[in-house]
Amino acid sequence: MHDVVLRDFEPEDADWIVARHGALYALEEGYDDSFATLVAGIVADFVRRRDPVHDRAWIACGGGERLGSVFCVQEEDATARLRLFLLEPRARGIGLGQRMLDACLGHARAAGFRRMVLWTHKSHEAACALYARAGFRLTAEAASRAFGCDVVDQTWELDL
Image 1: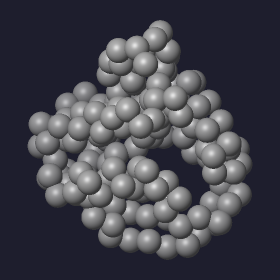
Image 2: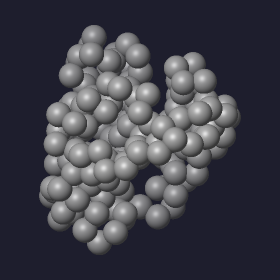
Image 3: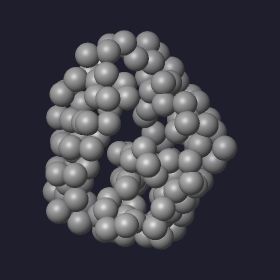
Image 4: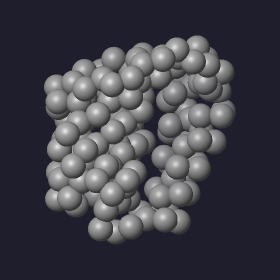
């Protein structure tokens, strides 16, 4: 793997984020197109409402291509939300996910947040293990139907 850099999100990254989330989650989880629609809305909200002090997003790049994304957005005055954490399969297992999570948490702390929350699914075992190692606590879990699949929603929280 070539040297990987984390750079700030640019509006030109939006289409890639939506397309890769849609394609990877369809392939790996069986999600339908409603997931890509959700991602498109999240990205559009970020572009439209971004507060440069509190909100930040990174794109991992290596070998001339995008390899991943992660977003930190203000949820409430003291709470940040981790969103759109994605790694291309070829970029997994090399510590890049930890590096991206560390960047997100570092920004949240520097921006004055006291808590970070995230929503995921139980089937994302590698990501959940990463969150647990970083000190996140699983605070809610419920079976649901989303994106054309039966899923188990999870909420994780971390005191910063």
